[in-house]
Length: 353
Image 1 (cartoon, helix red, strand yellow):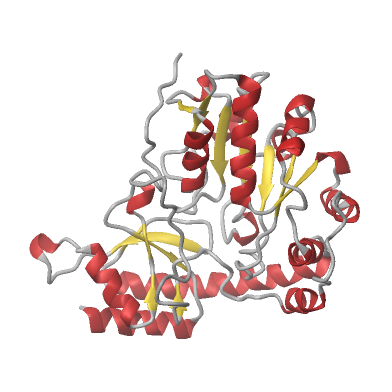
Image 2: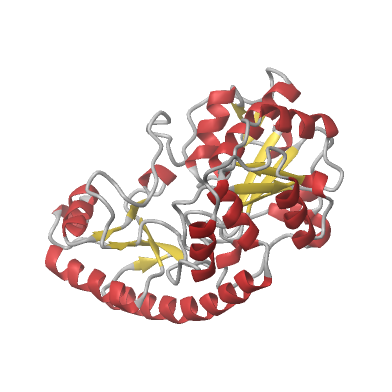
């Protein structure tokens, strides 16, 4: 089994030097932003209070001793298994480099067919070859619920069961707190075999605060863990990132999230019903976002001129996420939003038709 270096057909495949994200753009903050996967009920009020009270006059403890212990206690793991990161993207870059250095020049990476573009960008920057066969890869990525589809990762449990010594699988759990249906593919025992990447800012409705952490496998490769720590920038988390993660590791945060999920389920049903009435083709999703296709009857052959259509919506204060860079041309990703924003979307669709 061999790997070949190629440009992946995932997000960023058309331009790995230009990462694509939802959210604000050159025109500013959209009035109704459906392009990110943030919690539409957010932000969590207590997190806002904690951010306002954060002491930005001083550096945090460079070892983050209290924070690591708090996160470890919350998850029921040893503090030595917690790896703090400036953001999910920073950890993705760091572990890609660490695996490449650990496994050597022939190291490869396996990516899901449709995935967050930073996996591919980091792999290419680190010199990891793209592998078609997960058994040939030193580094494997998974995200569940997945982005952009919000679905289970096909075959994930089998891939974890088949992991060999020297292989590293990272499970990106950015959207697990925003799961509205379905169940995770991995049981508690399987989770102990993978790296879990956790980024609470979307769940807490505060995407502007960058902070993340990973939980190492129970029997993590000690050399890889040491290399990850050695590759970390000094003080990757500022005071506001520390405050966000401290609040995250608390019962009130997750009580609030449980209430949010109940609200989001109702909003999602309403949003799906509206779009179905308008003839959209909607992919199934377990998360607070979904992928859909809308045919434009005014265009030639009934096919959508995506950029023209998206720009028209943007002028009406609506931003959606083009899925072409995920390898899903002709489709968009939409976050579940409050009824007022849904009504604005429907009105904008009528105005741009």
